View 1: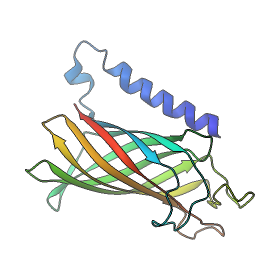
View 2 (view 1 turned 90 degrees about the horizontal axis):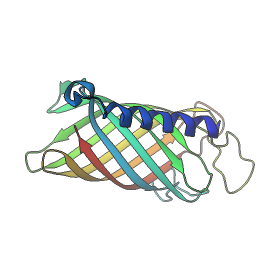
View 3 (view 1 turned 90 degrees about the vertical axis):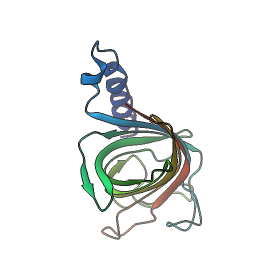
View 4 (view 1 turned 30 degrees about the vertical axis):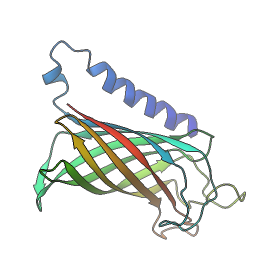
Length: 184
């Protein structure tokens, strides 16, 4: 499963990069609103999940797509992303619906809800791995950041995955870190 997640993540990245090579970039990238890359602390303790079992750093890549709906002063857009753990612990792919509010000062706030698949453990087998209970989990991201001009942003990003007690095991997992964004 871990190999499959990494393959899908790399394939998704390759699709985004290869689409930039078209002669008419404006039309080829019209479906892509923003891409974000981050470095995240894996399984951060003392947040929503409460404790830490896993380690390492996650490399995060996310695409936020252009189709949107205006809602309560912000914009709702679909997002697809993934995080790969650098020491072989739980990695994930996710798809969300993301609401983001942007202030004229350049500050922004985003929150979302979606689903994730992961390659972690379902049940407690070792004290160094989380028991996530289900292969498909809820994904809840929160992001606060600042846009430097029209294209570049820097943000603090948090996300939580869990099965919301729909399975017997539900230790959940949190990540926290920074991301750099680029708008097309």
